[in-house]
Amino acid sequence: MSKLHLVFGGRVKDPMTLDFQDPTKLDVVGIFPDYASAEKAWRGAAQRTVDDAEMKYVVVHLHRLLEPDMEG
Image (cartoon, rainbow, N blue to C red):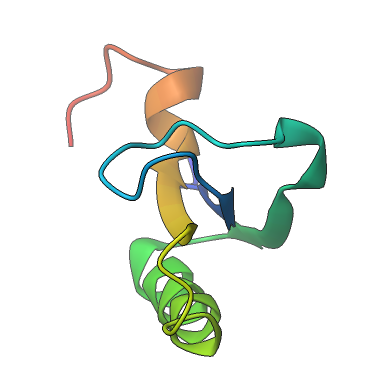
């Protein structure tokens, strides 16, 4: 199985959390086939918004959601 990764971000209520202000306005960067390409996309998105403390981007391991018992 492919180890898919999702990269998305948006404005958070508190920069120390992942509590997004408006989930309908999330910026979905994309779905990537491996962690390396997802991390590259995450770094690019995060760098574009580095001066905005309320913007946060994350990498989600979709393969862990699809098969939670699968070992890394």
